[in-house]
Length: 340
Image 1 (tube, rainbow, N blue to C red):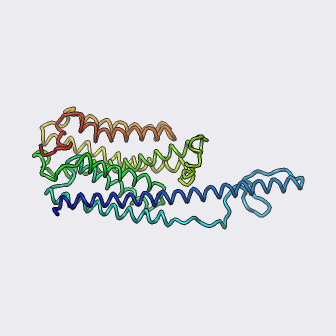
Image 2 (cartoon, rainbow, N blue to C red; image 1 turned 60 degrees about the vertical axis):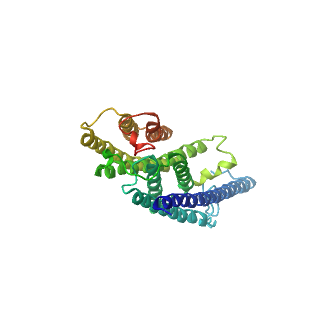
Image 3 (spheres, rainbow, N blue to C red; image 1 turned 120 degrees about the vertical axis):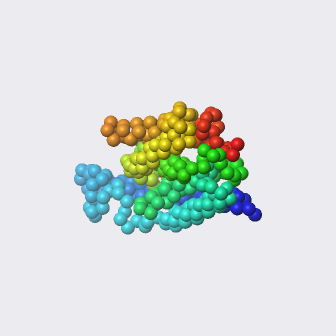
């Protein structure tokens, strides 16, 4: 078995581990949703019992959120209620670490097999971008409980890896002279990191929209199959997390544009040439700059901000796939056949 073949096998192994992590995270969300259902049922029962007691005593009915005769806050979960088991969520985190480690080894072996930095085409960009998204999720999980994001981050990661293996795969070879530069490591590497962080922020904003719709009384999202949304943080917390992630990714994307312009001057003798990849990279920057400006200075928050993030990530995906596949330009070597 060659190193290139080993790399492919490791990618499939990573996808398998992440699929199992997806299942574990889904089970964790289901159990949390069941816990929320029990708490809400208990709260309604305590409120009803209190109202009946007050009515039989001839006393005025108190607020369902006020303290009752025993000092318990009606409508709140009981203090002695057992915490739900998070074993499935912990297993999901462990499997995500395993899948991420396997993917890292796959990327390294791919680079060794090709004899260069392993992010010179769409296949490799997908592998490394997926790795960064997983790493960002795991790093954030060390500081706060974000297991509620696990199903979605691992699900997208499996989708990206399967797509890479079946649609974007190219044989590990050398690259064109224009790519034989230290700027390949800097410019493309930073772009990949930014894309990975944008991915996690996108997932967070989608959850924000779902949770906000659920809290607003959306009939469809109020169905039993969507009760797991009650176990996620509120829309404000999700929006704050998405904003922080996007702010970090935007700084990295800004450096991507600057580094790309410098590299273009070295390689082609001009900083900017309206190449399709250059144009769409700038479009991505404009969208996220508008999002950050609107949220920080214009008061754009809530659903409008989340929609902005989704539009921005759609531009990121088009810049990565559509531009490479649909347009010809100086960045065509970043597509499926970089050695041509």
